Length: 141
Image (tube, rainbow, N blue to C red; front, top):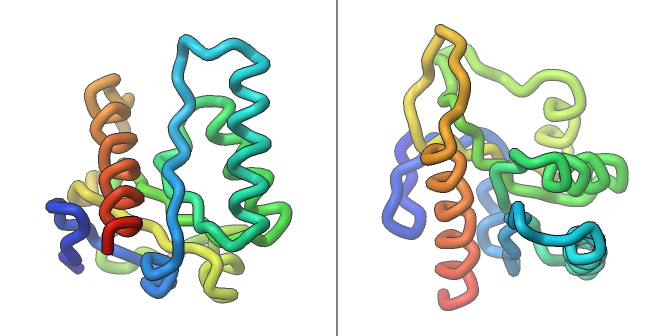
């Protein structure tokens, strides 16, 4: 509960040691062409295979595809999640195994909400900025 990273408090579940490795933020831009998206995906996967931990909210389709590829290759990642963790939270499915193997850290900047809602553009933007801030902070530390 309440770890401070790049000026923001997060609740965390998973391998905190991933924060000590080189980090790269995953944030695809809406205005990118398909070629630019693919080039960025290739750059991300090459970095991950070389030991860099990718960090992001993994919201857009291309970001979700990067997330899926990381999971399939069992590469470590840090996922900034939009909804917090309740007191009994534990990762489920593939996230459970990735966490158990030390390949996943989930960070939640906001408290848990039991009601469903649609994430806003402002929230998406904030999550992406958090990922970039943490990656930038880690590279200076």
